[in-house]
Image (cartoon, rainbow, N blue to C red):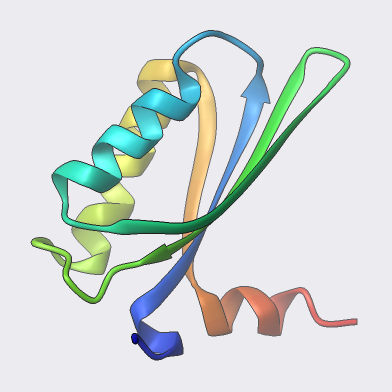
Length: 94
């Protein structure tokens, strides 16, 4: 099992359209990253998705994966942000 430094949180936000989940998950699969958990919702035409992803077997660096996800988001017209899990939780603590 991976440790926290091997997990990232991927957030997706934008206008809902067909292919968002497929596009983001295909980038992760191509890079050797494994989706551990995923949740998504629609709010008045806005698509919101969060994924917990294991990158311990990734074929590319975290920075390269971030860039590929960002480019895919631009293609899809959504914002895609990837952060290490521990940084995500630190930034969103209450």
